[in-house]
Length: 387
Image 1: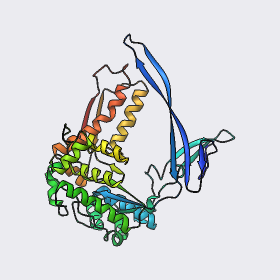
Image 2 (image 1 turned 60 degrees about the vertical axis):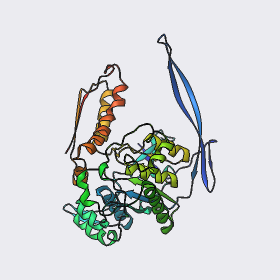
Image 3 (image 1 turned 180 degrees about the horizontal axis):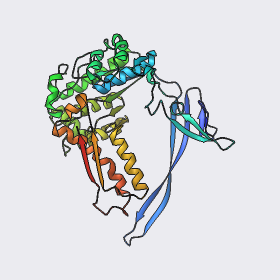
Image 4 (image 1 turned 180 degrees about the vertical axis):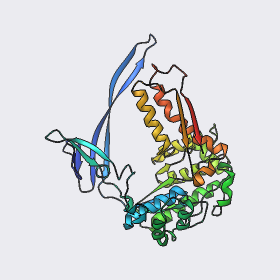
């Protein structure tokens, strides 16, 4: 029988606790593989030691969402507020209490080890390290549409009417900041929503976003801010020498107002220069080589190339299971039925292509891992249908 614990402490010479920090040493072991000209393969164990330092005091954190007034932005904001305020609502099946089921951090556990009786012991993900609760997040952000979040929530048609009714007085006070809008990067059918946009050169826009982050942090007494892109999927930007292949070329392209620098890349650059972590939740190529080099130079975390939380995740799990079991998938067809504005934006071919690349690439590593099943250059027939 498994045991469940809510607190723990590590007893190890490699882990030290103080009032301010948890410091630990971790040895990461891997294997370096070298194949010689005569075809002989040699595997050599290698180890690298890392030192981690974690603050024990949980900071006051703000989350700024790009696309705050969209379906994702309004739904996640409503969910956090409902949990924070303990708002329950009536459905056809009865009263629903707020919860975080479906959240990796809030609703999952990790195996800690075994107890003295040999039982597995599990710990909530949230208790592994000092971690910010979603209920404590201060939420704000940008959107190309100026609708307040209460009306935007109603427009999205995601949440139950009784929940929306109770959230309305709170969310009507939340209005997105003006955002960056380049019509040639998203579908033409988004133009009718673009009534809340910033003007100016690329450099002006980067500085404006940086100022927004500073103001948001100061106004809410925050220790840290993170930025999450949840706006429309953009078409892929060109990647070429002199445009964005290095940090220097990217900054020069921003200075010259090059039209091939995307809004999401400008947001990423603003975050990096401001020392703010940036998470990309859409499948466009925001992180061109110059962005990555700039982030490394400034030691700022950037992450993500799509949330991959629905159909794409299911496909990844199933293909991995089949190939690991020695079963060869020869055809993969996935259907994505997208509602609301996400589907409208992806109805344009260029934006659809960004999503298609993201969804198609998830099986490539698994196919490459098994040359017994797949010969060089062979792949399953893979079709992505987005409605």
